[in-house]
Image 1 (cartoon, rainbow, N blue to C red):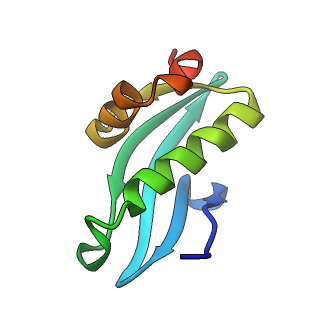
Image 2: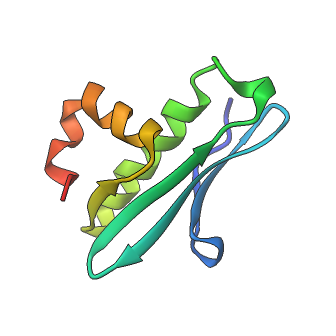
Image 3: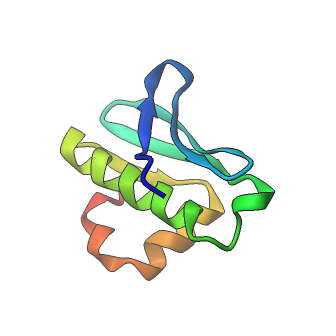
Length: 91
């Protein structure tokens, strides 16, 4: 898939076009901290790594923005537990 992750700040979510729709990672930003609240991947795109790609690219964007992360979403929390290269982002 050649689409890239987009930060849709107006809707407070990262988006990635996927088979069957758009994968999203919803967030809230307050005081230099981004809290991921929910991740959703279209049923047709599950098991294709879309959710992981969405979160990886979202976290790379968060790093460039200088924010810290609170992973309230279980998918993001599990991703961070498996990808220690993002440990420095966790608030």
